[in-house]
Length: 358
Figure 1 (cartoon, rainbow, N blue to C red):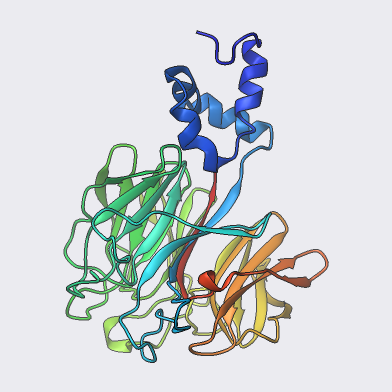
Figure 2: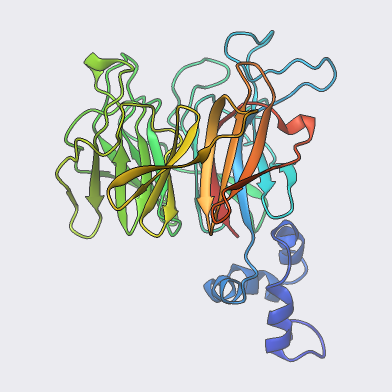
C-alpha cells in the first residue's frame, strides 16, 4: 500500500518527517501504513538526519487561576492547595500548551513528582499524592505519537521523595537518592527501562544524597551535591559518577562544586561543560574551573529551572516568592538574554522539567 497515492515512497516519507509532533496522533489514525511508518525507528532516524525534530520543554508547573488572579502553585501564600499541570514550551516558537492530565490524577499532578523524556515518551514518577499527601511510587507514561497515557510499573523500594531523576534519552530513566518517609536520606539508585517497563536496582552511591541532582553525560550518570540525614539542608560540594558499561561508581570528587549550594539548576551544556546559577550569576565549569559567564537577568531573583542546548540556555524563574514565573533565553556566544513571552496561564511556579527532542 502506498503511503501517499501517486507519490514515490521516498517523497512520501520526506513529507511525513516534516509533520509537527502535535499532528502525530491525527496522522497515525489516517491509515495503518502511516501509523506503522511514524512508529518505526527508521522514521525517527530520518527525521533527525533531516533536522526536522522539534525540541520541547515539558515542565511541572503550578496552574494559575485566571478568574480571580490567585496563583495556586505556592506552598505558603496560596489560598488553596497547589495544583500542578504539565506545560509544554516550544523554545523556537515561544508557543505554550498543556498536556492532558494523567488518568489517575485528573485534578493535578503529584507535588514534587519527577519527569524524564525517553524517545517519544514522557515518564512521570512519584511525588506526593494530591489527595492523601503521601509519597507515591506511581509511574505514568505519556506517548507523543498517540497522545495517550499508559501506566508503568511502580517504582520499587518503598516511599521516596526529593530524589534525583535523569534519562539517557534512549530507553533508561535513573532515580537516585532522596529521602524516605522518616526523612532518612537515601543512597540507593534505580534504573527504569521504559521499553520493557522494568525496574532494576543499581549499586548504591558511596553516601546518602537527599535533594541531589542527576545528569547523564557521556554515557555516565553523574550525581551532584545533596546532603546526608545528619546534615539536613546543608549541601555538599561533592559528586560521583556511575559507569553503566562497568556497573561501577567512580571515586567521590569532594570539591566538584566550588560552593555548597543546592544543585537544582546544574545542567549539562555539552562540550564537557556544566552550568549552574549561584548568587545571581550564571557560572560554567570549564577545564575543572568554575567561571562566571554572565549575570542573571535583573527581573530574576529565584531561578527554578534551567536547560542548555546547542549554544543557548533557557532559564525560568521569578522576581520573588509568589511572583509570576518568566523565561529568558541566553545566547551563549553573545552572552545576551532575550525574554520569552509567557501567557498568564503559564506563569505559575515550575517545580521540575525536562527537554525532549521529538
